[in-house]
Amino acid sequence: MNIKSRYAALLILLGSLTILFGAALKAEDSMYTNLLFISGLLINFIGAIVLVINMYHKRRN
Image (cartoon, rainbow, N blue to C red; front, side):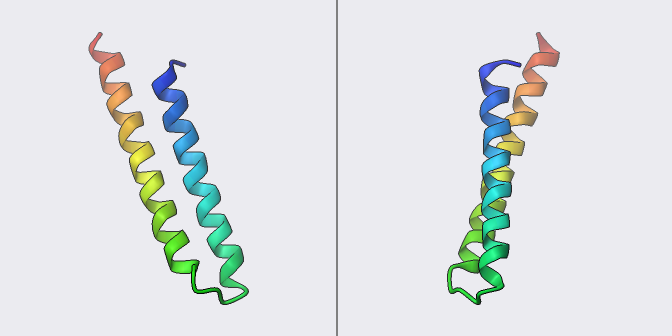
């Protein structure tokens, strides 16, 4: 696993943890719940894009 794959995996993990933290705050009816959900989804999306680009470059070489 090269460095880009590790960064992509860390981004996806960070996004998932952000979504889980947003779910925990939803039980308390916090105003930051939607912000955490949206930012977590965005982080996961960026991580998935990095992972797909990295897999494409690995296959090409």
